[in-house]
Length: 65
Image (cartoon, rainbow, N blue to C red; front, side):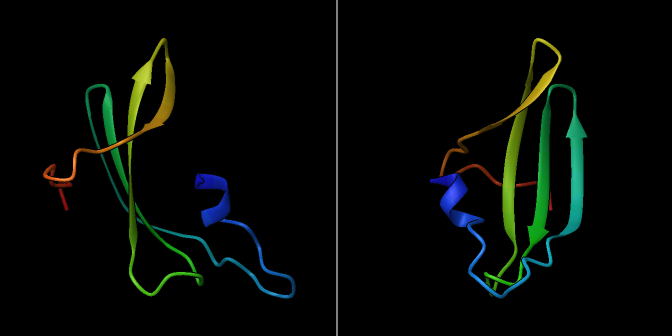
């Protein structure tokens, strides 16, 4: 499903922009924008075995920005 969020429609550019990032230990938050969405999105990542991986965020969990 994540891949579908960034599927490139023919003839358009995503214009991905990093807006903000916060790293606290093994948890990172990334706020981004694309030309496909009207509002910025947020990724939550966790570091496991030295590799950052996208994870689900609890609906009640607040991003640090």
